[in-house]
Amino acid sequence: MVLAAGEGTRLRPLTDILPKALCPVGNVALVDLAIDRVRPLSTSIAVNVHHKRELLEAHLAGRVHVSVEEPRALGTAGALGNLRDWIGGRPAVVVNADAWHRFDLAALVEGWDGARVRLLVVEDPDRGDFGRWRYCGASIMPWAEVARLPATPAGLYETCWARRWAEGRLELVAVAGPYFDCGTPAEYLAANLAASGGASVVGAGARVEGELVRSVVWPGGVVRAGERLVDSIRVGADLTVSGRPPPAPDRGGR
Image (cartoon, rainbow, N blue to C red; front, side):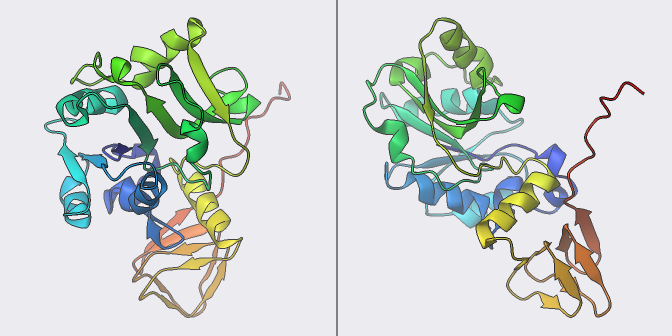
């Protein structure tokens, strides 16, 4: 199950143009990267869609099972509950379309007992979801957990993971390496630069006559002569989104 229904509000204005799952990283749509990541584990793949769903439906047609969520998105738990009949007694690997990393998901299923929820995590004390461990967008849910999820808007953390963590029944599989959730322009740009080895990324059909420094130009984008883009995302000829991280809060007490 690839989760791709979110509105991506923190990534606006990019997600006013494309759903977040279709935003390219290294010139490949995030949803395609996620599908490629899970395909070695199963040939039975579903993707849920809501925000700008027509674009995603056209992109995914004939490749995966598409779960349309209307009139509103169902959240991470509701998405699975809505697919309960399709899942049909099987465990489910669940990944976020907006999670960029190069981790082998075989680590998630290796040695799994089939009974406990497992999450892939990286060590990140400043942004940890479970102590010092930060969830990095991949989990495996046993059928017993999937079967009780609602088909109404709800999140997996609230309906399942927090309780299992408190009970000591949540398994964390730690991996090491770069991970970006692509939820903000800064994270999205960082994922592109990680994918390219630090070079600027230029999409198909783009025209670059100016200078790029650690920047991304979407397919068909234009950077005119005399322009210099630094830490930015260019869409079309005129939209420029800064990918610089926000300034750190002042903790000096002044």
